[in-house]
Amino acid sequence: MISRKTVCPLALSILAACSQQAPASQDSGTPLNAVRVPLPESQPLPAAPAGNDKPVWAGAPGGDSVRFGAPGAGPDLSLSCRQGVLVVTRHVPAEVGAQALFALQGRKRIVRLAVDATSVPGLPGYLWQGSLPAGDPAAEVFDGPFTGTLPDAGKISVPGSDLVRALIRRCGARPATGATPAAPQAQE
Image (cartoon, rainbow, N blue to C red; front, side):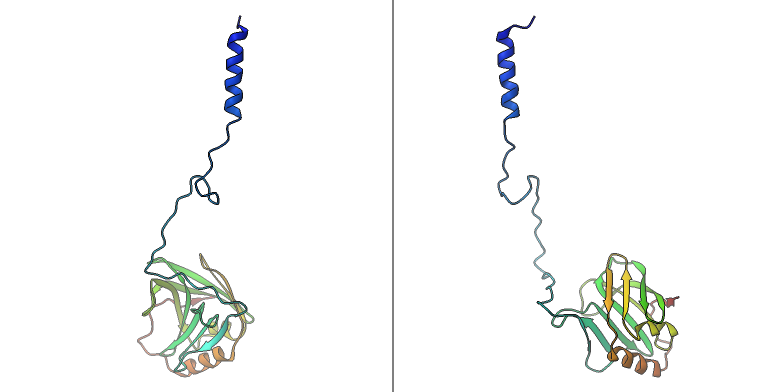
């Protein structure tokens, strides 16, 4: 038989253990096991678009490329003409050696453009880039508003623009030479 002398200290120790509070974190706004990771100082953080700045199309000097993005920020998407070939660049990071299909849906057609992780001169890292002849019927996807979806890059909704149509028209008037970019062609 258990005596009363044994039960009382045992009950008190159980009650005391139940009433203890969890240790408080040193920084009251963070979880207990939080780990701080320093950000690299060599690369600045991307700036968020200021206030009501909506992304727009803008032409580059020389007329051989157009960019879509918020004014004052880097582009989200760009189209350029190289020797009769339309080069499409989605400005989001890509892993070295990665390949994907950039699904583009316009008013007239749906195109799956093969894109590769490509090092673009003057920009850090790798971006998604693909190409197609400017005279290819698949280029009609850029005639008006379109959406584009790329794995790990999300969805982009792009309005139509006279700048884009003019670029494609000028680029299609140039004959494609044998020295075209090595990116794969579009699949429909």
